[in-house]
Amino acid sequence: MALLEVKGISKNFGSLLANNNVTFKVKRGTIVGLIGPNGAGKTTLFNCITGIYKSSKGSVSFLGHDITNLPPYKVTRLGAVRTFQIVHTLKEMSVFDNIMIGAYLREGNSEKAGKIAEECLKVCFLSEFKNKRAGDLTIGLKKRLELARALATDPKLLMLDECMAGLTSTEVKESVELIKKLKNKGITFLIVEHIMEAIMPIADNIVVLDSGIKIAEGKPEAIIRDERVIEAYFGQKFSKRLQKKGGARVNG
Amino acid sequence: MKKNSVRKNSIYWYLFIILLILIPLIPQVAGNTFTQHILVLVLLYASMSQAWNIIGGYCGQVSFGHSVFFGIGAYGAGMAVVKFGMVPWPGVIIGALIAMIVAVLISYPCFKLKGHYFAIATFAIVEIFNRLFMVWYWVEGALGLDYPLVDEGWKNFMWYETKIPYYYGALFLFVIIFGLVRYIERSRFGFYLQAVREDQETAESTGINSTLVKLMAMGISAFLAALCGAFFVQYSLRVDPPMVMSLSVSMTFVLVTILGGAGTFLGPLLGAMILIPLQEYTRVLWGGLGSGIDLILFGLLIVLIMIRQPKGIMGLINEFINYKQKKKQIFSESQEKNQKEV
Image 1 (cartoon, rainbow over the protein chains, first blue to last red):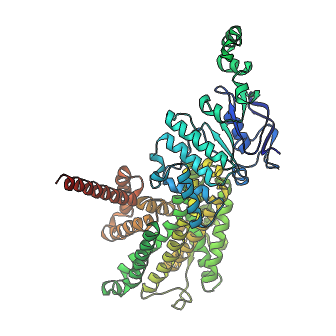
Image 2: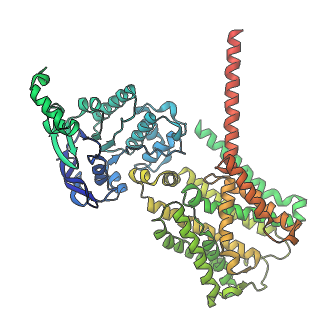
């Protein structure tokens, strides 16, 4: 059974259709990448899944529960936790306290929650910043902090919204390693990402959105050869030129 | 290490409370009702502001409606004594519970508004309740409730000759409210309050039911504010709507906390320690000039401090401590260097 099942989600803002009948599944223990050009509706889809927006049509189920239009905190309590594209660090609190907020979800006892938070600090390589004010961190660390906070809630599914945008290449590598490590611990991922060299090697499955419509789904190797995907990213002209060149490029 | 520092802080705190208990033994205090009066008011205002601090400081929902809850508490005790001829205690409890219920009912729709809009909505609520109590015949409308002369003592919570028992009453209130906030600050609920203050969307996406957290904070805050109101009416032996349910009373809650440092544990105490003596001494010194000089000075003080440090006096103190620590660190580092060179 799929961990997360999105069935025919549509979302419109007035006459603008941001998501149109999007359907896909996320299997347990896999990493699914959600890609698409700017304005494709990836973040909107995220917001519909996590209940920040109410979807106009369709349904979402997680672990067999129907979570369509459930308030965000309930979705999180079930174990589907998200991070934000624009970082939402709790600025005035220390790094440690930020993670404590997540740890308290499953553990009311401050001491035990502290241990969970301590562990998440270590896993996300944030130990040395423990007592720093979260607002003073660099963007890369803030994104990692957000991941650590989500991790502290003991999630089954982590939904990362462009958690690598704006990072240096070393930081991207670190994040990729981190995601691999967490996957081995049994966490399932749904990742929105623009950086192809980061997402392609780790994803088991890729879903491509364009103008709110799912245009392709499949293994990363297949996706990068998919005509519609290339067209969506680079335009028809480029796509045709590529076709003319034929398989030469693809085959080597 | 963190545990140790917490324990150390606790010791300081208990020592401070013991000091407060012993203060009336000082002859200058024991013989001077004016000093006693100031001490009582400092404790009362600190308690009031700390009650506000739960929702306004820690949870970041700036409410100007707290004079309503303060007033309901005051009327609770007042009605018990004046209308029903009882001891005030049942009125205190009932008043506080009503204040809590009213707070939750009012806040639920208001919490749909955020930031400044929430604050404006609470402004309106004060005016509504003020007018309501002004024309409400059952609670004597604008005339207010005047206390009858009853026996002195703890049973009626009323004294005429001395203010020392009032001081201990206020101290009791102070210890309860500050103790509760201290407990909350370190609990899960305290963390959730701060998370909601910092970013509601994040709080929600981390599994926090932010509406529930805000309503609980408001309920607790209103309950405690009402207890302070009940004390206030027992102390001044009279209550009418403008005395308790007015914007200026609401403002005191807010200003004292903000001057001291909103969202900090000691902020309300520091704020009250500055405002109350200022208020009472200016009243004595320049009473003929009309009231308000204290507020002019206080306003000026707030402006000056806020320009420097938006987190109030506690913010300044923390800044100073950090500065000292950094200096120490740099000093020891440079010393190490020197030693190596030698």
